[in-house]
Image (cartoon, rainbow, N blue to C red; front, top):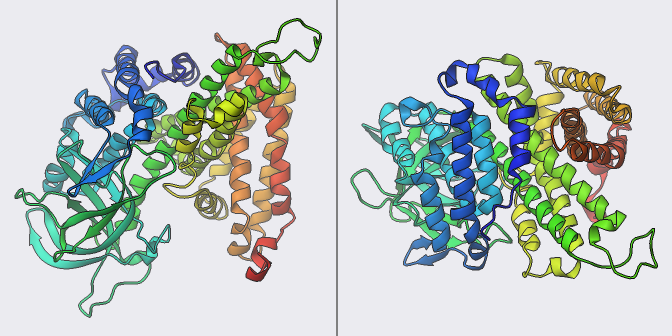
Length: 581
């Protein structure tokens, strides 16, 4: 597909008119940069997404990565597209200038990610992972480690991964069993020999770059041969596929997982230490493995939200174009018409298109708003940093879950054709289905939001969010009073649910319904941002108003239903017995 499957005008509207991207040029971190500079980067990302990535998206689904004498091969067009992206330096957009990057605002970086992910999400995941990997090394590694492990990624000579899960350990990282045996020290720092197996490792093997730098969570073996139990025993290691002396490290791809979607990215089973121990160097201090890794995971979680938003957009545009061209049936108000009408004349099809439009615009707004908070937080804005911490699990999960709803409607609008491989919407759905799972499932995000951010909130994050929502409600009171009232009602119900959760006898009782709170909070945030967008006086306002009206009339009422069990202190999921299931 040569055309870029993304609405650039909507992206620009949100960036420049709504978020006032130009204001970020006043931050010291971006001194000397201009909107024209950023637009040039966006144009480059747009062009490369259309010309180098999008044409190979379908092929990467049909030609999955394969093992060739121990080397993982990637679909050739995808490989060339990723190389073109990195050769253009776009993976360095957010890297500081003194480290060879452009030091652009993360808001601009997020926009480039959205375009590349809409074009070919599997290809876009390679630089996304590598950027997050190198950022961890730059933040916590020594100068020698940065030179050995981060700089090759900056120079497009290496790609990076994060290796957390194991075959018997999903998200319960405290149970990781990969061992790290102390092996002295050298110029790169404390050296260890790693032994264990890691599972679900995206880009764990590839032929795009000659080197792969793995960031591996493992536990240091104690003198008596035991491992420290729980997450406090976790350490983080840089484990290169090729050692500094040019020899192969003891890291082997023992298998590839065959996925439902996102097939262009190899998903690997990695064995560390089959021949005596993979050499790795500790990043950061002992016992800091998980906190350090969470920096990479939080960055990746925003990236997951961006990818889900991009796929929601792609599915929406595909089904809208199909509905405008496909002629079928007669309009409800003109059943005796001589000729059939386009699908867009049917109210139920319009409903499904409005749903997709609201989800796509709301998801993109949520991700770009979070990206702007990153920029403001990096400049010392404490409120922005606090709000970002609260919103991160929502930004990851709401576009992921609701993006699938949008993609479901895209298939439905295509009818039987949508269920075939002749049309792209089935692949869009399969690609998007990963997003509610990786980088922390929706259930884990719910526990993070309610358990870490709301039950014991001493930062005032929810009060800060509520104040910003109320400000939008006040501005909308005259222009869109019904939508403002619907948002206020949903916000009040969410507040009641949070209060009820705090009053439960134990945290476990409250967390049993955490996903309900997460879903409702996501809807409230999306409703707020869609209303804020609808108030913007700029071209395409009628479409934004229609999307906001749809969401306030059709979606926000779900909030009360989701939260009723929370407010009523339902204990069903805690009390149900295994035999009843």
